[in-house]
Image (cartoon, rainbow, N blue to C red):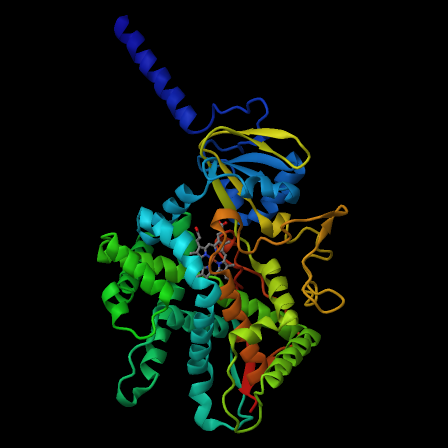
Length: 508
Ligand code: HEM
């Protein structure tokens, strides 16, 4: 009898533990946000989220209001959807809401890399030093030099133009040029060997770009743990390729490595970080710096090509800046150089970039609840958050596409961020109240993107070069804006399912 009683106790305990682990026992406590566990134990709404996060969250908002908690693959994520309450999350101290645990987990999954304490310091303290202020001036010049190598030098002997049209996929073209210019600016150029000039850089950066695209195409499957055995092997091969070319030894052999990457390497050596971990960290830096700007540049050019009035305004502004700086664009003239100061004189291009980022960035801002706490919403209502849960903001849907803040929110309006006097517009309203922040393209608070000024400069410089140096047009002006790959929602800027053909030729 005692034996059967023990078996029963073990069975009941096991069932309770399993149910607990599956989330079946979790109940909404007093003052907690509405809880939606979905129908499938443990999995909850994970499939709805991965299929179409945007439609799912819209449905949840309609059902539950400004704040709700959903179960997703064993995680409990509280979504805050009222833009006036975002600050309560973003300005909360790190001892209560922190993203490092989540970042650590994702980085390990994607890059097979366990960051150490010094890596957090490099991201948060030294990145701003080298990617902003005076550090940014040098980096911007390096981007310019590399854009010239990649865009203008191959055709230099055929100038003066105009020349034959070249046809290519716009997405492929933008991702290729922007990735390679950024890679060379950050990780340096190969030493010039005798007569070869930049030919080696040209070829090697092309190879790195191709591998990076392969890696990125598998990225959603890595994050959602859906890699097939063959793909796992492929990822290992690709990681190995990057760890090799980004190893400290290979970086030391390169010229003009950016101060950001050099100083990160020096700090890691001082902290006794292994060479392998340094290579792994470099791959992470390559990914954070390169996964968005190419795609965002593609959408910028596509929106401009679909809106001739906007293209004309950007081109006229850029040509005016060149003239003001005494750079003449004429057949047979010198190659133009876009300098840092010139990028500060382009309110129209700034508005175009902000409008594009508003439309195409889909990231979530995520924090882990470090201790039980109260979140005070804008209206004064207080909600209890549980330690170990996550809190998320989805600016794409609940800020950038809010029709009250941005009327006709899915339409590209190149001058949306311009005041009538031509200056930058930074004040937007909802229900008669100023919305602050009105954009969250770069995150906010302690984890705001330290590369935001660098990223903007490289994208602006690329677009500046495209509109001033080339005639550009769509092969089919009536082509529809392509559908996007929804698997990338939350991970990076939108990417088209199909490329769009365009043609370009040197103007002078
Ligand atoms: C269009 C281009 C880019 C976009 C939209 C973007 C956006 C973001 C976002 C949303 C975050 C997370 C913020 C948060 O969780 O609050 C982030 C983090 C970060 N970004 Fe960017 N980024 C871009 C380009 C770059 C570039 C070019 C670099 C470096 C050169 C860079 C370096 C970083 C780093 C190091 C972090 C981690 C910060 C931390 O965890 O402390 N990003 N970025």
